[in-house]
Each structure stands twice: as structure tokens, then as C-alpha cells.
Image (cartoon, rainbow, N blue to C red; front, side, top):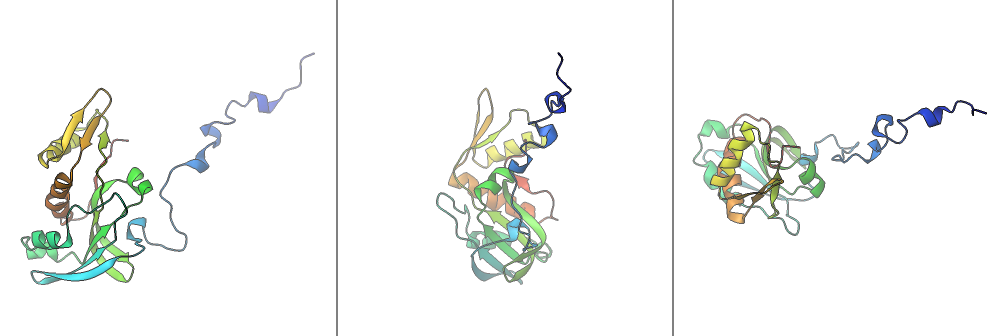
Length: 205
């Protein structure tokens, strides 16, 4: 005798993503319900001091890096480079934030730095340039590069990064010196321009 119709057995979507399976495990950067600030404005502790750059007085905020991480350039390096920039470009900058990303943020949103029209970091407010702490782990890119990323790869090589290509991926091997060149002489100056999409380390996912 044929058994009765069982809708559970006939539903092929049970246990699959089409039915929602695994959505609760999606890897995302957590957001606080009680803090409206974006995650890159939330700093647990930092050292603050000001530097005069031309006619501008900029506030520097430095979050201590964790083990294995470091800032390729110092606040004094940044102030020295900025003093050669046109004064009109510095009028839109209030804060320089040296920030330590979490490992999850590094995986999901890896950047050299970012420009913010408005940021609220602890008790300081204003437009900001954010430079993120780095480590010496190699950076992996897919081999199928868009023209934009192909040009960026050439720029990274000119910064002193070692580019290694194998059968599966492009590996960018970094050093403290090459990271200093990228952050201090390219990223910092790039972020002085009107804020746009952040310079990403890995954008080919």
C-alpha cells in the first residue's frame, strides 16, 4: 500500500540555504545597538595629542596596537608629510586616527586607511583620516585582476612589496619598509582628497 503524502520528505530545501539554514552563522562585523557610531569610530583606549601643521592644529589619536601588529609610520612622520601639502587641503582635516582593527574586521573589511567626512571618536569630533595598524602576514589576491587592481598591483610593487604569483593566487609579501611607503606616501595623501571608497587590501571576493 502506498504511504500517505509526506510534505516534509518532498521538500528538498530543508537544511539548505534556500530555507535559511546557516544564515545565523554568517560572518559579519558586529554592531552595537546602544552605540550609533560605526565600528571604525569605536576605540577602547587611545593616546591623544595635538600637532601644528602649517596654520592648522591637528588632533592625533593613537590606539595601542596588539601583539604582532604595528603602525608603519609615526604621528611625527604624518605631520612632516602633511606640512608640505597645500593649506587648502588641510582645512578639511581635524583628526588623524591610528587605529587597531580586530581580526574579523581585517578579514571582512581590510583597508590601508580611510577618510571620514565626520567621525566621533570618544570625546573628539570632526573630519578624520584613519590609518590602520598592519602586520607582516602576506596578502593574497585572486589571479583574475580587474584593470584597476592590476594598476594597484604595480603600485604596490613600486612601494617595495614583493609580488609572488603561483598557480592559485597572487601573494603580496610585505615588509615594514614597504608598508611605510604605502601608508605614508600614498594612502595618507590619497585620503586628503574628497572621501571615496577606502583603499582595500583585498577586494576581489
